[in-house]
Image (cartoon, rainbow, N blue to C red):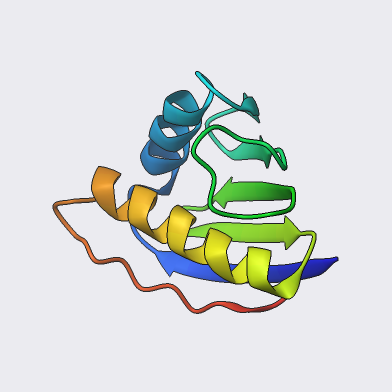
Amino acid sequence: MTSLSAHVPTAHASRYLQQLCKHWQHNLAVEFTPEHGTVTFPKDARGATWTGDALVTFDAGTDALSVRIDASSDAHAEAMTGVVARHLDRFAFREAPLAFDWNPA
């Protein structure tokens, strides 16, 4: 298991968390509140380019969105950083690209 985390500065963390979770809940297992969300990416997700499963956790603060990726391999964790960043930047288009400081969790 590989874990990565990022602290993403934004004043709109809760909004982005909710938009992202609503977007993914159509195809994935998602649970969220305005402050916390989890998205489970199964090994066989539709259109997936990865080979393992992952859990992405979001926590909204007043000045940043914290993101954690727990993935089945290093390669999968790295692929998921791109998936998360692309989707967040899509919702945060007014301030994109957002700054992601990915680090081992």
